[in-house]
Image (cartoon, rainbow, N blue to C red; front, side, top):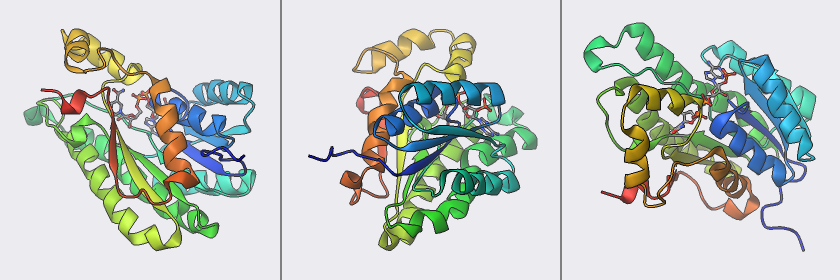
Length: 255
Ligand code: NDP
């Protein structure tokens, strides 16, 4: 019997797949049989992630990319197709945050966050599109946030980028559904990664506040993203498109 979430023969490209949530997505795809191209800035982190995925028995390779540079994004997609033979699953996960009150946000801060979190997803999707449609089973998984839903005082740029990622998801889903490409967005709650380790240091009380508000009673971990990646990338999710799915231990439905 074929497993429901079998991804054998499929190729996935995961931006920011060299650590944190991105490596969780990559592990989920690899565990279902996909070959994975890890894309990040740090060659050392890329190599460690490739070793981890290979240890699971997956084919894994890495490409260095700066997702704030659209030429670098195009080169990342072309390198994936050249080296892995095709591209079926694009995970737009790379992201960053600069926490400042709105009155202190510089144009550079704004553009760094918007380019990394939003513009990169648009142009990676555009570069991947001809390859995703080629076999009629294309998948795009974008990474949003609880700040796609809420506001917070230090997050004008980040919340703007992550709110727009949900709308980008919906727009692309409507454009490409008839070509067999689904486009969905994952909304992580508070997850223990490098990004939030700094937030916990900067925001006293955050650690406990998350534990108290999330009905699951804990922070999330990158392993919590393996299942959603496997599902959204699979043929079983062929009729699921344009969604924004919280993976948050219930944080967003709790007062
Ligand atoms: P990490 O800091 O562990 O991961 C960020 C990833 O993005 C790294 O792999 C990093 O690679 C990559 N990256 C950042 N900037 C660039 C760039 N310019 N070009 C290429 N790659 C880049 O944090 P998380 O795993 O937490 O974050 C992953 C995603 O999840 C982000 O989109 C974030 O906004 C989102 N998210 C995280 C939440 C959390 O609680 N942790 C909550 C909600 C959303 P490298 O180091 O090599 O540059």
